[in-house]
Amino acid sequence: MNRTYVLDANAVLDLLANGPGADRVELLLKDAARVGAPLLVSVVNLGEVFYHSWQRHGEESARQTLADLSRLPIQFVPVDLPQVLKAGELKALHKIPYVDCLAAALATLSQATLVTSDHDFEKLGRHFPVLWIARP
Image (tube, rainbow, N blue to C red; front, side, top):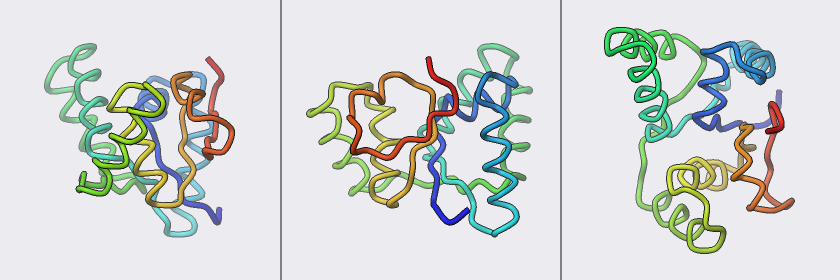
């Protein structure tokens, strides 16, 4: 693996639920561990994962999920001003959910490929690098 990857929340949720994109995410995680280059996840998208886990399985399970994720080759990236401004730009231009814009902004600023199956990202066009783990 010679690219940087940003996982959208749905890619992480697919991994956790063994969804249609789980195998692809697992391969990326194995490659990340092998080369020592963690996958990136915005803390905002981590919050989405936490919320969904809490809603489906309760608070204790959600907190355990975060602990489990912290042991994987994933780097949780704080939100900073450049990321917020880039997300605002993407929201204004493409009208996708703001939390998705934050993942896309992180990918853009990190010169990374966004890993997702969320069809909202199709609005960004072909010039935005996306690794589709499962087509909606």
